[in-house]
Length: 251
Length: 258
Ligand SMILES: Nc1ncnc2c1ncn2[C@@H]1O[C@H](COP(=O)(O)OP(=O)(O)OP(=O)(O)O)[C@@H](O)[C@H]1O
Ligand SMILES: [Mg+2]
Image 1 (cartoon, rainbow over the protein chains, first blue to last red):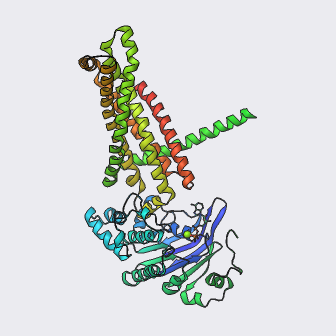
Image 2 (cartoon, chains in turn green, orange):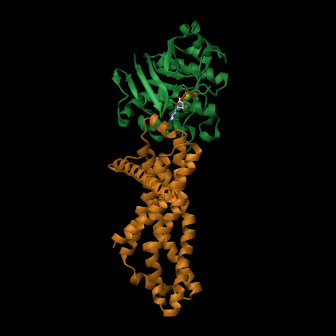
């Protein structure tokens, strides 16, 4: 396994979010994390790059334990594990191409003009070539998200964490992003961890899936195993039935 | 009882102040470490210098001009009573260089640039743009905070030097118009009596004020919690903290500097 979560616990104050979550992600896999809103999917993946710290348990990456590293030692890991946030987090003070050029300038040692040229290519990959000079604030959520994907890919990461990459996108652009994720894995050997509610994405590109429920990985398995799973809770989540045994926080 | 409540509120306030002071000290340490040797983003530095320095120039110039006028009008009474026209140039210059210039311009700068800086950093923090930077393996301290600290310190120093000169011109203008003094009287009164240390005294103050406005505004910006409401509170706290620190540092520096 390239990435392993072992018995992770995480609470915010008295609110226990993760309660013994364990799962593993293999090299070159497209791994989906699914679960109800507020269950702790975003929190889980933020632990991988040290934006949040776990309370108990261990996280291993590429054979090494990383959860106990200092902030400084997380920087090399962040160059290998890129993250696309749920809310794009583009920098307001820069245009889209400057946003995408920033990691190129900082990490690939490119000169400003060279970085901007490469940024334009990356934006074209997510079909944002007409908006390279726009400020993030002038764009829609879905457009910002695509630009954020381009910015993360500029890092040329070996692993990409996508937090709801297709939420807020129209079906055409959503399927384009799906294809991009699949191609990254098949052609460049990139491992992707995708948090998603988008059933179409899940059942078209996932290699394996983990369903988080009540702070644990309730069920993990391949796409086929999920399609014909007869567990009532998993079935209810997939079918989206409002009645059933599935308990959601807040209800 | 009211007494108890007052005491506990005062205690809470003190604890709060110490905690914020501790946080600021840690941030200052990180900034210093990033400055030795200087590692910072050049485009960010230039962008900040431009919008903090250049764009502040008009309002600083305008206020400085009238402040010079105020000094002269206040001195006017004395000039008439004591027939001390020969002291006006020196008096205005001494007060402007050492005290009024650095202090007033710092307060203006804090209101315009410091609060803007806090609001920007706080918004970036609550919208996860700071985490976004960290996720791109870019340390926010050298990338965001250090260029701002350097830009604010340098800009306030330059603005103060410029503002002082404009205040002197303002003073001279109003002295000629309102008090009927000759320009040469004012000029020689200033250059014959003013000491270069008076100028250095004010310049040191300006640099220290700039650094302290930068530290408070950056600290409250990046330590914000709780959405848009938090941003408002952070700006408020930063402006108050900057004003208090300017006055206290002014007291301290006036006491120790020659
Ligand atoms: N920094 C934080 N401080 C306090 N609580 C937090 C913090 N981050 C997340 N939480 C809480 O942790 C829980 C899980 O949040 P998380 O963002 O991981 O949900 P999610 O599974 O990604 O949901 P969604 O599908 O809606 O994005 C939520 O109840 C949230 O309120
Ligand atoms: Mg989420």
